[in-house]
Structure formats: structure tokens, C-alpha cells
Image (cartoon, rainbow, N blue to C red):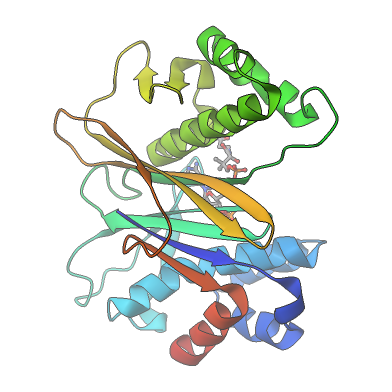
Length: 263
Ligand SMILES: CC(C)(COP(=O)(O)OP(=O)(O)OC[C@H]1O[C@@H](n2cnc3c(N)ncnc32)[C@H](O)[C@@H]1OP(=O)(O)O)[C@@H](O)C(=O)NCCC(=O)NCCS
């Protein structure tokens, strides 16, 4: 499994890059992106849709042969059937604030969307409140053990643990293609021991990669999940520095490159 990450900096992302990037997409994606009120949201969505297109381009698929579809629960997948694409590709996208990331790998289980998922979140540790509002809201989705784990350490560390729990749950359920449609109480993750259970049992055959990405003054936490088969489940904390499993692009250069190669 690999990850491509794109970080967005509004000052470098010109209107021309945005407009030309938009033209590379299908009419439905264009219409969705144009509906966003905030430019930042529109850019995140645009980049999220260009990421799998660039992946297909790298595999020799021409833009006219690139087609995408979504499952009933909304998970996008590659629908292109072209002789160039002799091996199916699994991908999933996540975006938060200035980071857009795509996990991908060989599509080998549960076609057509396959079992790969990713979730990224900007780590937010507000200076004063006892616990940030969103932690209180999301806490309803935690199990008793997860809540105890978050509360058993000093506040800032508890918030960090909360982010690992949340991104783990989201990545896993996005891999299943259900997202929040899967009861989060059924998944229990202890970030201190890296123990993950679903319905009380360790799920078999998963690879779960935990990573951090720094952008400007912010840190993002991410988890990429893929069902790889076999009996083992491995949770791998991975460094994003100089890593070959992670490619980091800046948004303006990424979209400019997409315009060059996809047009
Ligand atoms: C999809 C969902 C997981 C997104 O979570 P999020 O943390 O807000 O957003 P992320 O940035 O991590 O992911 C968004 C991306 O996930 C992908 N996605 C959409 N639906 C998905 C699904 N069911 N499974 C996996 N990935 C999905 C899309 O690429 C989406 O990008 P886009 O919004 O730009 O099109 C969440 O909104 C959700 O669970 N939606 C409801 C699904 C549902 O209602 N299911 C019930 C019926 S079974």
C-alpha cells in the first residue's frame, strides 16, 4: 500500500490553476465542486479527484478512458476497463484542512471498490478549553475502554490519543466502504498498545499504517488501512520523512502537473 499526500497553500493556488484543473474532470465532479461556497473546500475536492486520475495516468490510461463510479454507500472506485490497466487498483481519498491524501494498492479483495481506506485529520490542541468541543461530540462514538484511555493521561496527550483512535476507526470503516454507516462502538482501538478489535476479536488480514505529516505549523495524523489477506493484522507506525511508501506534493505543483499530463 502506498500513499500520495498533497498539501494545499491558498496563496500559491491561483484561480487559473483551479479553473484549468476543473476542466480535467467529468461534468458531475465539476458540478459538485462548483457548489462549494468556500474555495478551500472546492480545491480539496478537486485535488481528491485528480489524485486517482494521476495514478491511472501513471499506469498508462488515457484521460478519455478514465471512468469512475461509486458504491451505494458512496465509495468511489475505478470503473475503467482498458487493456493498459491489467491489474485492478484500489484507492481511497481523505481530506482535512490543508491535506488531501490518497491510499492505493493492488485491488485484490472485494471488488469493485476493494478494501482500502484512509483518514487524515489535523491535530488540534486548543490552549484553554478542558477538552475541545469536537472531542466531546465524537466521544459518544468511543467505547468505554477508549474513553478511559483518553482520560487516563494528561489532557494534550489524551487529545493525541483521541485523534489516533478516530483516524483508525474511520480508515477501517472507509476500507469497508461504510464510513460512519458502520457502528463505531463495534471497533475498539487502544493506541497505547496498538490493539485493534472488531466485535471483540482481532480482525484478520489487515495492514494498518499510522503516519504523521507536518505542513507549515500543523501536524496531521493519518491511518491507511488495507485488507491484504492471511491471518496476521499489522499496525505499522511509519515515518513520512524520506519514505518510499509516501509521496508528498504541493497542491499548486500537483495540479499544474496534472494539467500538463492529463490535458
Ligand atoms: C464518507 C465518509 C466516511 C467521509 O468521511 P469524512 O471523514 O467526512 O471525509 P474524508 O475526507 O475522510 O473522506 C471523504 C472521501 O471519502 C470517499 N468516500 C465517500 N464515501 C465513502 C464511503 N462510503 N466509503 C469510503 N470512502 C468514501 C470520497 O472520496 C470522499 O471524497 P469527496 O467527499 O471529496 O468525494 C462519511 O461522510 C460517511 O460515512 N458518510 C456516510 C456513508 C453512509 O451514510 N453510509 C450509510 C449507508 S451504508
